[in-house]
Length: 306
Image (cartoon, rainbow, N blue to C red; front, side, top):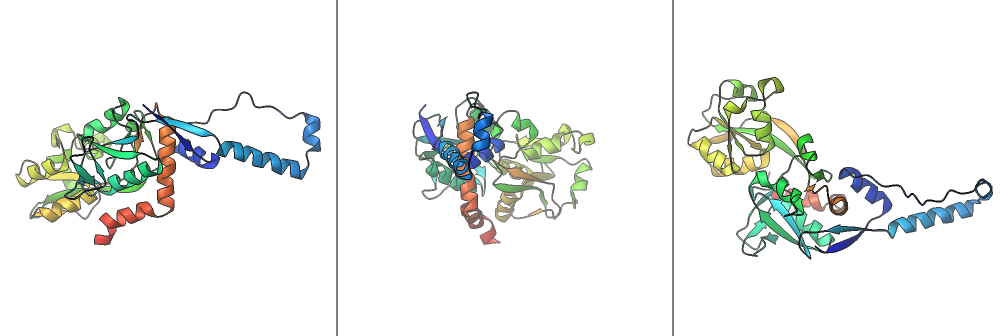
């Protein structure tokens, strides 16, 4: 693995480490000023000292590694439009073989992050349930797949700041007797994508606000859950609002309930063993948010079409 240097200003590094679950380490060799010197410091000397400290912090390089030289590998499940999907055209990134092209909100944002870090984005397409373990095992650099921040996931990977808000909704047949989320509790069978928060929330116990595992069937991806709904194998599908709109648009006879199931935040998951990469990615992400790039990408796929 090749090491890269990311020059981060002290303030931005502090923000990045906080978001990524890291913490700054104190300098054990820091010298304490003698009392006499402290008493005689002039305003000019104090300013010079502050500037020197800032310059030193700005010149400090944080080294990070990637799993492949010159590349940033993104673990995802490319069946989650409009966040990640295969492309009919050239797309914004390819798989390792360069034979499959990808596009979507996550793909474009990740491509911009990779560009800022001087790397080439490579997509590792897999089942959603494997994206975090792929990062943990060092096979991918980051997990970006409409990935919701949860306490359980934070035990396995560090997260960047959130870059998007996801809303879980319910898809049902147009003639369904399910009118609200509360109706799901009436012995209905719910389809979800395996490993998603939709699965986590719905399969939880009734006491915890779920419907129980006996009332949930998980599928490899959202498209398979929709096919099960059309075939009458499940009564409803719980999934993120944006892919839900895509699925309903191309499948006649389905609708999305007006009531939201849950609101959550999306972020990028990175190995706890590589806090410098997490800080660098988070810094690049925040720059893209600050200059409006992330919003432009979101508008391209979502808001502009509404």
